[in-house]
Image (cartoon, rainbow, N blue to C red; front, side):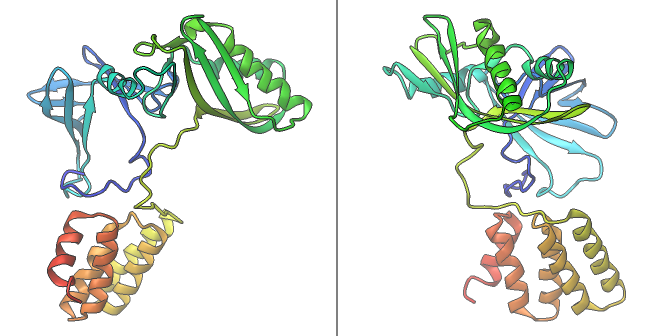
Length: 315
């Protein structure tokens, strides 16, 4: 975030690729799946990329190899709620990643840095499933193996026994991927004998409806330090509003109770914790304030950490 706080949204570790041509920006939320792309037009105004009257990106830094932008959304003013995003040119990321395996004949891709599909296969497969009235439900893991010098693709699946309908769908997935080497853009990986992409294919399909998800099996990130836990956003907002109402009625203990409940149901609701700390400090209830500030510190929120170090580090 703009003030250095950890982004607690569920999208925080989503890899994001921007492709900008003229006044059109496409956001690819999965670097290897071309279908998961949203495109929109924008206007340049000074150092702003304006997406609408209420949304824009402020360009903070622009070099031939990198871009840093600050998200601007009407109504969001607190620096711990404003995203600051850094982009690095894809070719540089690929070069740095492949250099780590220089001299090896095999490379296993990461979730974020990988050969990319040049065609949307999920839509194609869904259409085939629909025509053949497939009914299936499965999760299958495996590896996509690309052989650049042979210009061949091999799709491996795990050895779980599947029923007839599931196996037909899995076989169609394999055939769709293996039939055309040109489905893949392997720029930067050409010198390897074999490229391995771990994947997971998840399908829920009944006649008339269904879903199909195909994604890289490597986790988004290794960092397990901060866990986002959202039980019920609606209940959290409801309790937060009850806390505000309690403040207006000068029932401060009730307010603390409701704000704590709000955070229990959605630990990204950091404003609830700041309110607890503020009320408890005014009441000279240091232990209550420090408990809230410790939670903010554990969530790597900059202002909460600063206040905890000032008021609670010796407690």
